[in-house]
Structures are given as structure tokens and as C-alpha cells.
Length: 120
Picture (tube, rainbow, N blue to C red):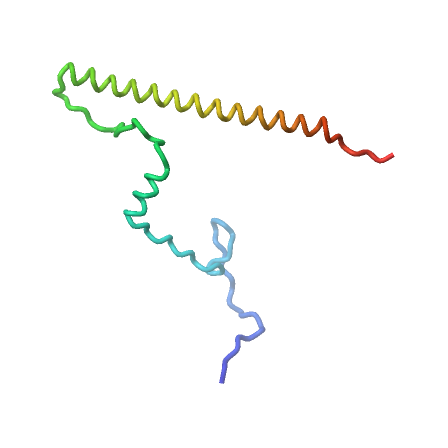
């Protein structure tokens, strides 16, 4: 004998979440995404490109007994990294500006050559 669910609603009260107002237990729980193996993560990082090129561990503690030459070399590296970051930022900004002007030009061109149709 096969038991079928009854068509009548149960008399059990529905509990609502105080935070969201969504019925508790109504939606199925989501499974957590599986952990990606380290090998795949490394491949993804390599494929992303050189986003953080020149950026080392910025929170790295410096040696308290560093020599004057070491300090100058460290400062030089920091300045070079900042210079590169400014250059990347400038390039990205120019790309966005060029794309915006291209889109505005295209929209203007469309309006000139495709005027709205009016019925008479």
C-alpha cells in the first residue's frame, strides 16, 4: 500500500523568521560549495593575469636592524610599486573614458540617423 500525502493542510503552525520574515524550514538548506583543490586555485591565479604584479606583502614586518642601504632599497621598491599602480590606474581610467565617449558617440549617431517615428 502506497501512502499519499493528504491534501488537507496540517494544523501545525508555520514559524516565521524574525529577521527575514521567511517561513523557517520552508526552503531547503543550501549546500556549501565544495572546497576547490589547491592545484586548481593556483591555475586560476595564473590565468587571472598580473593584477598584483609588484605588490609584495605590504604588511610584512621590516627588520629593525636593517642597514641604511637596505632601507633605501626597500623605500625604492615601495616607490616603484606605487608608480606602477598609478600607471595602471591611469591606463584603466583612460580605457573607461574612451569607452564612454565611444558609446556616447554611437548613441548620438543613432539619434541623428534614426529619428523617432511620429504618426500624423
